[in-house]
Figure 1 (tube, rainbow, N blue to C red):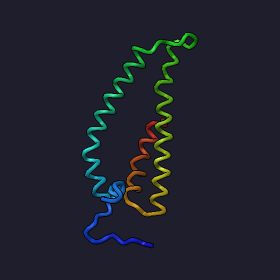
Figure 2 (figure 1 turned 30 degrees about the vertical axis):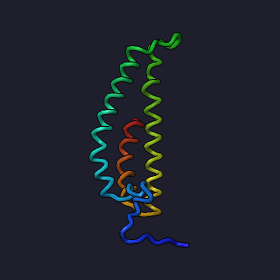
Figure 3 (figure 1 turned 120 degrees about the vertical axis):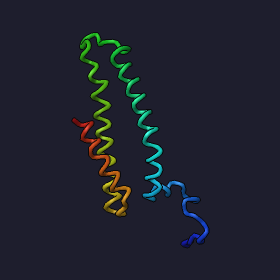
Figure 4 (figure 1 turned 60 degrees about the vertical axis):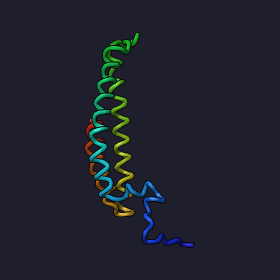
Amino acid sequence: MLRIAPQDEDVSDREPMLRFANPSFVLRFAARAVPIFGALAALLLAAGLYLVFFVAPADYQQGETVRIMYIHVPAAWLALFAYMVMASSALGTLVWRHPVADAAQKSAAPLGAMFAF
């Protein structure tokens, strides 16, 4: 039987993930989250580059050239992930015509291209 929510009951109280379907909530959340995640990403990138160039030993056969794997492989995985986000968002845009899915697709495209090249 279909249950219709009373007018005073908010759907997001029952389903907390449905809040992310609201474009205004997503924009407010992104305005707070982007600086935090940007600083965290810069810190982790600096730590990773330090470990790659100063801590990791050279390979016994390939020498210093093996270090390209520490940059190339994660970049390839991130490019594939960005293209999967684009495919999932395109499905959400085509099926449900949701504006957040369209925005996610448009923002994932340059990231995928950046990590692929």
